[in-house]
Structures are given as C-alpha cells and as structure tokens.
Length: 125
Image (cartoon, rainbow, N blue to C red; front, side):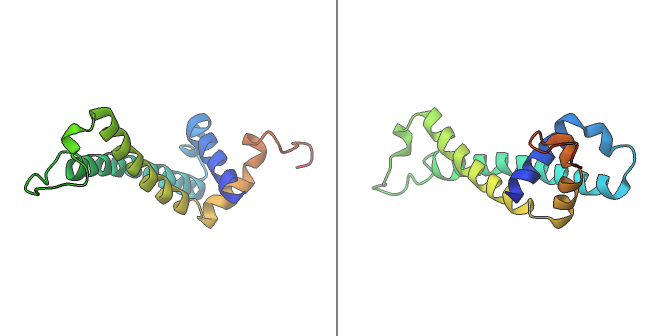
C-alpha cells in the first residue's frame, strides 16, 4: 500500500507537476530532485548492467572451455538481449522499490495525495 502511494506520487510529480518542484518549496524540491536523480542513475546502472551481463555471459567469452552448459553462440540475439535486459530490469526495480521507503518521500506523497489520487474524496480533506 505504501509503495503504491509513493509510486503514484512520483509518477505525478515527475510527469505532470515537474514545474512545481522548480519554483518554491526548497525542502520538497530537494526530496523530489534526489529521487529523480536516483532514478536517472538507475537507468544508467541498468544500461551498464545489461551490457555487462550480455558481454560476460552471452558473447561466448568462455570459448576456452571444452564443454559449456549452454552454447551461447547458438542462442538468437533477441533472446540474449531479452534475458540480459530482464536481469538488469530486476536489479533496477529492486533498488528503486527499496529507495521508495524514504520517510520524507512518503510524507510528501501523503501531503499531495488529493492532487494525484482519484480515490481520495477531495471534499473530505
């Protein structure tokens, strides 16, 4: 439940209300900008992890071995990229979900919840 609220908030804060965080609210701006920067770093890490997994496992650098469990030269390129991409996606999504448990980010998500969550009745707040 908590991560769902924070994920909706980050989606709203980045895509729909990005101008809100460049004007006022210095403390809030720092929290949001930190999360956005972390997400961008994870994209870079994901690209590096994808390339590293592909290069280390799927290019056949273990040619010196006489018998391999999987002959990687016979595996089609799209399958190799899909598997290495899924490994990179799993790594990045796990790191992203772990970072969403920031108490300051949750405080902001609860504060701005009437603006982005359709399930909340705006008249109650």
